Image (tube, rainbow, N blue to C red; front, side, top):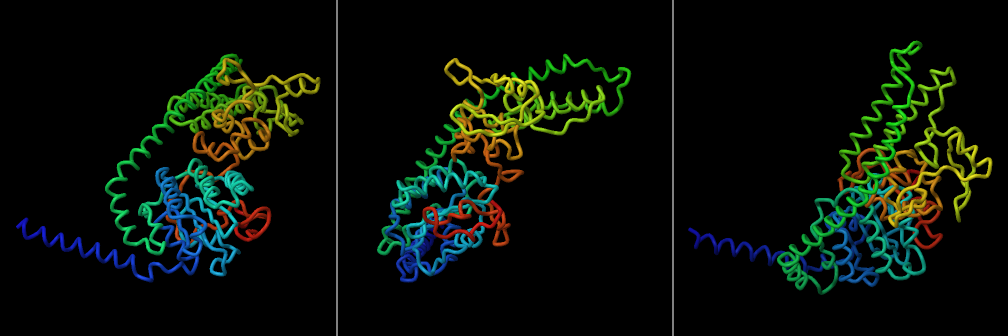
Length: 462
């Protein structure tokens, strides 16, 4: 039975290989893509598409290297290299590519000598897309497609959320190169046989490295958060309030209960934290608790209920801010920051505020905005809702949070906003996705350097 079955299987396998080779060598397969739809269809199978007419922009070897970077990172990053022809009209090109591909992700297009990128907000926040795109549209990389695309991809895979789409086959970019089909088929077989283990090893090594870096960052944050939780617990102990005291009513007891719940919530969340971004929830709970205490104090003294304001910028442990003041960090631009009453008085007198300091690793303590990006999630929980970018612009922490690598390592929701809810990426959305939420560096910029087209590509969603 085995002897009869083996020849049959072998013959079937040979027929499949022959058919594949015939398909690859057929004139139709070597024909250049005529429309953006063809490029989109190719991107459903591989992360990088190079139109045959734009092959001079990116070699097959460089294309494969880009694909390997994206696939090893397991991120939904799509790159299209297209000729600047009538087949690919500038107006709405980026949005059309995203629409026709139908998969949430980060999209980049090299169109002739121009470049543009956009992303679904679930995958990369608006500010991050802007910063990343602007960083590769400079004289150093703009004239070299390979350098520009590598720079973009290297940073995009660090920041993009979600995973690569399941539809990717693992790379077929060489099939659009004339004369490459048969050798490409042989190479593909060799890659499948010999490269699978290597790719797995690289991916595993990258994941282990990232896990180690996240643990180190989380250890830093635990120290700071423990200090915050301790300070809040001490404030609760000093609170001269008892639910059964004369004059206490249900609203006061409710405020007190919320303050206690926030304390327990913060302790539970830090115990369960596994990633740096989890710390946002801890500091958010502490801020909720401090506001509850401020409301309780107002009710007990008969004062007006305080408006819900962000905490004191200089040290969130000071409690909710009472006003905004103009402040200029060392070497930075002036900006308004929320401050508590005590720090407002200090600044009015020309004194330094009582700033929150953290360990910067050399045995010294410095204000948190002069520390590294690990403290971004800590600050993000206190100053959410898009407030943090304006407060930290021009500071060391602000500069680091604005880099594309930040979101991957420490949590993308801390700087520049983003979409609420869970991060996605690599999910099939079809052509009926919410196009108002897709965009990036295009309003007033677009492809090219400081001009060109792109004004209609993004709408107002980003």
